[in-house]
Structure formats: C-alpha cells, structure tokens
Length: 310
Image (cartoon, rainbow, N blue to C red; front, side):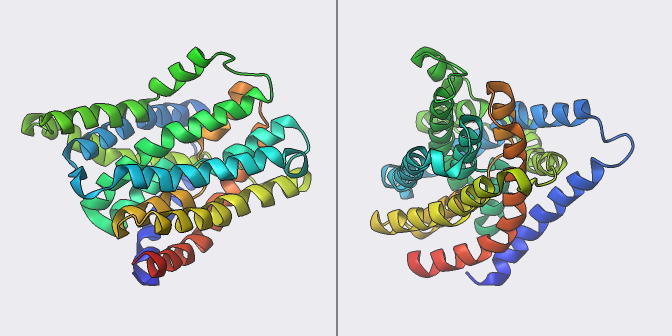
C-alpha cells in the first residue's frame, strides 16, 4: 500500500462530509429535523442492512476472529483505563471526562466501512462488518460505564445489557452471523431489495457526519481536546498495531482493524453526551476536530501499519 490508494480512499469520504457540511448551510437543508431524520434512517435502517448483508455473505474461515477481537479489544480497554486513571488531569470535571473517554475510543462506523471498502473491496467491507461487530459493543459498554462516574444513565446491569443488545448495529451483525452460520446466506430475492438499501447507507451516513460538524471550541477545553485527539488518532492506533502484530492477525483483517482504531470519534457520542448529561459542547468539538485532523494522520498511520503487518 502506498500513499496514493489511501488518499484516493479518503477523497470520496472527505467530499461527502464536506458536502453534508455545505448542504446544512443551504436554505431548505438547515433544519435539525431534516438531518435528525436522515441520521435516524441511516443508523436504524440502512447501516444495519449493510452490516447484515456483509456478514451474511462473508467467508469467515480465513479471519481469525478470536485473535482479531483480542488485538482490538485489549488496546481499547487499556486506553479506557488510562483515561479513567488520569481523569482529573485530562478533564476539568466529570461531564468533560465522559467526552474525553468517548472521544478516545469511539469511531465513526460510516467512515470505517467506507474506507475499508475503498481500500480492500468487497473483502474489506465484509471484514469491516466483523470488526464493527467486535468494537461496537465494546465501546458502547465502556462509554456507558464511563457515565456511571457521572451518576447518570442506566444504573443497572440489565439496563446496560438492554442498551447493547438492542443496538441496531449489533443486531445487524448478529442476524447476519446467524444467516451465515446456518448456511442460508443472502437469498437472491432478498438481495434485490437489501443491496440498494445497503448501497445507500454510507453516502447518506457521511452526509450526516458533515451536517453534524460544529465549530471547534478550543478556548475552554484545549487540554481535553488535545488529549483525547492524541489518544484516539495516535496512541490507540499505536497500541492496536502492536497487538495486531503480536497476535499475528493476517494483513487485510489487521489493516481493516487499524482503519477503525485510527479514525475520528463518532457523532453518536454527541447524542449520548446530550442525553446522559455529559459535556455535549466538548463532544461536538472533539468530533469536528478529530474529523479534520484524521485526514492528516490516517494516511501515515496506515502506511506504517502496512510496513509492520505486511
């Protein structure tokens, strides 16, 4: 892998995010209701369909799922514990801490799936669905536990488990895995309906990412923004690269895992912060700042990963 394929893969992602940012400022496209509806459509319908169709048809025989999961989950847990231990240093209060934690471990699924597909084709999309199935529950559990420091959100294990098992991305992956393991796969008739829906998920999702970007407010949260961004775009990828090499994960699954561990935090973190009493303004700043900085760091991170994992 050279710099050119990575830049070419980033180009449509960047253009669609920028287009969403521009559309949000045009008459007729600026209402919160419009973009909230589009994001709900992508998150609850289109993206789960993409994950389902990808997992249902993927050949998992060549993907060492246990080793891949360990190589991705262990660095995520290490980073999370580090943020918790240093919470008084990295954030000025508990609401800000929850945003730093989310900013340090969450990833934008739309960006990850789009980049994996652009770089590695259908195999990349299928492996990306497996990576999402591993990391989506992981980061949601950790983020939810982070809010327990704030004494907000679900206070029982049952409520936490319910939030995880009803996550539409988790459901899409689980149903796809059942179809795959059972041998049903994706029937041709169903594919004629589901494939167009799956194809629409990433463009609409990336437009929503752009529309959701907000101005970065460095003045009040400079330390938190810098810390969370460095952790997400440099520290977590570095630990993940070491773990993927240590567990000898094959090249394509390892590089797809690196994509997810090296991209900006997710816009869903803003919704979570707003609903559970976190620092929503800081979360919005992290999403915007990381999305821009990711365009600079990701090509070099992936080039280094390619040289180590090849």
